[in-house]
Image (cartoon, rainbow, N blue to C red; front, side, top):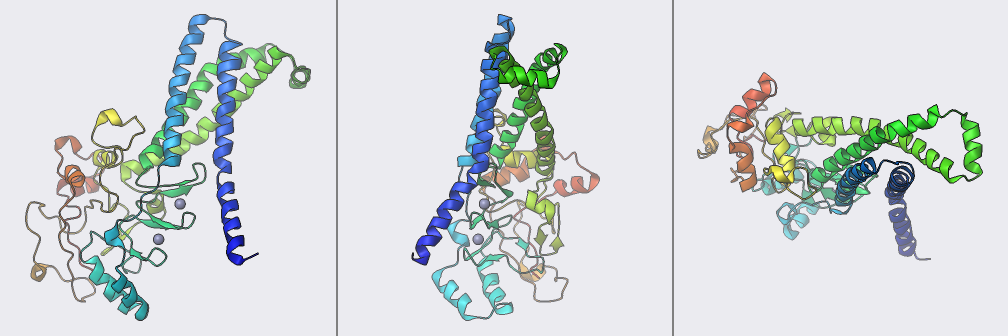
Amino acid sequence: MAPSGSRSIKRSCKRVLHWIPVLFISLIVAWSYYAYVVQLCIASIENVGEKIVYLLAYHFFFIMFVWAYWQTIYTKPMHPLKEFHLSYSDKELLERVDRGESQQEILRRIVKDLPVYTRTMSGAIRFCDRCILVKPDRCHHCSVCDKCILKMDHHCPWVNNCVGFSNYKFFMLFLAYSLLYCLFITATDLQYFIKFWMAGGKIHDRLNEYLSGLPDTQAKFHIMFLFFAASMFSVSLAALFAYHCWLVCKNRSTLEAVRAPAFCHGPDKNGFSLGISKNFRQVFGDEKKFWPVPVFSSLGDGCAFPTCLVNNQDPEQPSTPPSQSPPNKSGGEAHQFPAKPLRESQSRLVHSGESFRESDGPEDRERTGTPNPAMTLENEV
Ligand SMILES: [Zn+2]
Ligand SMILES: [Zn+2]
């Protein structure tokens, strides 16, 4: 068989294998639906009022959870805009020169017109040689998707998708609703779970009854395992959700929490933080009514992010002319990025009123006082 044919078969197999975790979750959710609705509510609960309330509340959490999960899986991750891709002539030029300083010279020229403020740890322009583009701030190349993903958080096998700018809000809602779904099941199933245990009988006797196929015992086993599964998932989901809430408040992606983004002046883990309220709105948007709904409402375009670093200039004022820029630390030639007009959503983030006042530590308060994100000029090292 031709090598290209075997490669495509391998790729197809991999694609199928990647869906296994999603299939696993879907099967568990489908079983939990059967166990809760049929075995608990319809077959076991006798009080009609209780049955109706449980079924209504359950379906609300179920629908929101499935909706958020669906959106996280099927929302395509966003890739850098055309302006970050190298032109044909730049590509040729880059291929002709040696790696290192001469390549960086070319990239520095390209990046001059782009709102790019992060660098590699060694201070070089971040360039993806697989996608042949200058990486926008917070963008990373995903080895699974083999593409550069805007504001990449992580590649999640449980949704078989990259979690990034386009679906991070959906991922947060997926965690929130799956946690509520599990907590609701745990809370309402608890009394029936206890009843089952209090009814007496050892586990192996129950198992024998189950194997003999009595429908009554079958319901009890579904109720028991439903409680175990829901409470176990609740614990792990609560931990993961709490961690991501902390990341949202700090305006960090999972990758940035592992390794702080590097700017021209060095790594800064709070480089993108604008204060809890603004950080939250960057992910969930300005309109409160959309916060709990899995529809896209994040602010910005995913390519440029407000930062609050270096010179705290007044955004209304024209940028400092190059001659007035302070020399860089290395004493080398100082270079200034052109001040880019902020996109509307980012301007809203930066110039919003008192309601966005920071409630973080004193260091962060100082940052949000006069933040001037993408307008901030940095000295390239
Ligand atoms: Zn890439
Ligand atoms: Zn990916």
